[in-house]
Length: 474
Image (cartoon, rainbow, N blue to C red; front, side):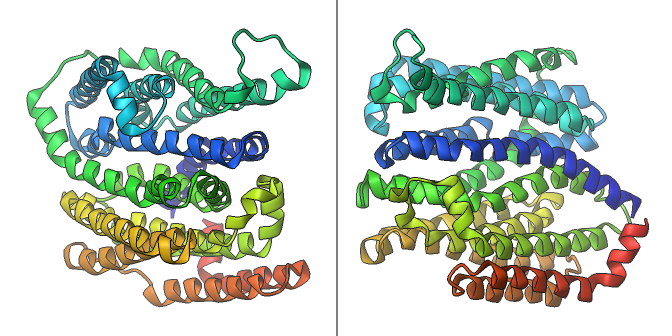
């Protein structure tokens, strides 16, 4: 249980580094949806769709590879320096290519050349800090990691409020300020925050002697390229809907869809916090005798927490809606939230299950599973959006992640059998979905909905009371 305590401690700290920035981002949702029309919010969404895609491309699975080989290598400094040098070289090559072909690329991507320049600067800086951030996690420096991440988002949020709220509110004379193109200031704020983060991490660039090992690079690349393909497929699963909707239904619909999608990000925050703490832990704990039992226990409590979040958010959906997306023009897409929440919970379970192909060096299967999900996402969206509207995009996400989850479990049990408590997991998932459906049909009666939330917690206490007592004692 002491091992589990360390896992939960690291997860809480890493979770703080994720949850707090994401929560601060939620502070920006009312600001952005209040200041930007749905069409401009669509432009903001498209910018970050491209950012996510190129970020995966430029890091090519190096972060996950770093954890895999840093933990088992006797020459840890060589692993770090090789990863950093390779990422730096590819980032600068990317920068040169975009500088040369800026206008051609902006036309091809259907993005303003001005926005593209900001995007490239952001991508290069974020790529350069991948290795230092991974190094902090690998050597067990969660507080340092968290403080830098939090500083980044604090600067970003502060600048957003300065550009979008303070300048027009107090009539501040800011050179070149353009009220007709407010969305650009969101991107500029992000770029400035990334510059400061880069400067804060410079000392870690020189923690070890910088030397490039072709042998280590080959190992990192062989392990990482399937992770990259899987990452690209994940970006498609997460963002293809937001990329295709402007073409099929218009920017206004995409802006409303993207705004309401943010409400479901509470589940994403939880999943990301879990991954930051879990991935290093799973690798470092893999040689322990009781490793599989530990993984199974973690999975069960992951599902419990995720299922509770599903019921809780649905119970008070109207409150979240009015607090985060105040402009009623966005509410046309509120019906996607329950579907996307369940989809993200399936994704979290899939990430948890994915330990089997990472520990057995079969990352190629992660790639295959993600490609399956991407194909489902693309086909479902292209076929169904024109038939049933934007709601098809939410159902496509659920179908993709649900099928990926099931396939990962079935295949994983053949190569790395973990004794998951399937009956309890299915029980919690089923109960949470049924209670959520009931919450949606109470006409926002918060007395009934609160009772349903407490009912779910009561089920957990009833079924897990003995184990919970042991965990709390330890």
